[in-house]
Length: 405
Ligand SMILES: [Zn+2]
Ligand SMILES: [Zn+2]
Image: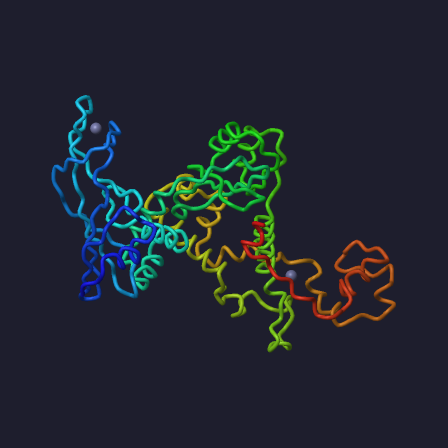
C-alpha cells in the first residue's frame, strides 16, 4: 500500500515537524513508515555549530503507537554529519530527533509516555498484559524500567509524618516507610526498621510536628532522638490491630463459655470432665493455623540443634514466645494455657444460673465456698451483667486504607 506522503506526514507525525514521510507500506498487521529528517543539517552537540556535510546514513527502527489496531514501525533514516570545527573534539555526530525519540531509544517518546502511565497504574505483570491487549507489546521489565526512569518527585518535609514498617521479604527483611499524614503519599523509605535511620532522617528534615507511628519501641526512640519536640501518637490502624488481637485472644480463651445453639442441653462447664471429646477436638481457624505453623517451626529448629535463644534471634521473636512453643509438646497445648482457670464459683455456677430464692440472694449470711460475702456480693453474681436489649448494631472494622486517612 502506497499513500500520499504529506497525508501521512500530518497523520503520523502530527506535531513532529522534523520529519518527512517517504513511504508507507502495510503488511501482516504492521504499518511500516519510512521517514527521514527534513532539515538540511544539524547542530553539533559539542561545539554547537550547524553543519550540513553528510558522512553517512543508517537506519533506526522505532516502535510507535498503534494505528487503527495495527502495529506501527518507523524506519528512520538518520544522517551522520561531519563537524568541521577545528577546535571541536567531535568529528561526526548523528542527526537528532528530539521530538520523536531519545538517542538510542527503540520506542518513540509518545509510546514511552503511554507505557509510563500503564506502568504507574498497573506495574509489571498486569501492565504487560494490558499493553499486549492495547498493541504496545511491552514486557513487564520494560514497563518497570520506564517507571524507574521517571524522576523522583521533590517532596517537602511533612508536618504530620506517618512511620510504619513493611516487609521486603516477610519474616526476613523489613524496611520503614515514611508517609505524609495530610497528603497521604510516600515521603521516603528507610533501609531498616531501627531507631538510627529514623533519627537521622528526622535530623536532616526538621519541621515535623506530629509523628504518627507504629508502636515499635525503635520508632519511639528514633523519634525522640531525631525530633524531640514532635508529638508522638499511635496511628489508628495499629490501635485497631492491637485491639483486634486482644479480643481474638480473649474470645479464644473463653470458647468453652459459648454454647452452641444445637447443644442447649449439654452439661454446664463445671460438670464436664477434662476427658470430654470436645476438649480434645483440634482448635480451628486462622489463629490455630498460625500457632500450628509456629510450633512446627520452633520444633524443627530445635531438632536441628539450635538453642532457644538462637531461634528467638533468628526468627525475630521474643524469647518467651519461643520458650512457650518449645515447652509445648503438641501445638494444641499452646491453647490450653489461655483457657480460663477454674474458679471457686464453678461448682455453683449452675445454681446461680438456675436462680435462687429472693431471701437467699439478699441474705448477708450467704457465702459460697467460704467466699467472703457482703450483702451485695450474691446479687452481683446472680443478675446478668447488663439487661437484655436489642441486638447490638454491627460495628464495621475499618479497613487499612481508612485507618491511614
Ligand atoms: Zn563540533
Ligand atoms: Zn468465659
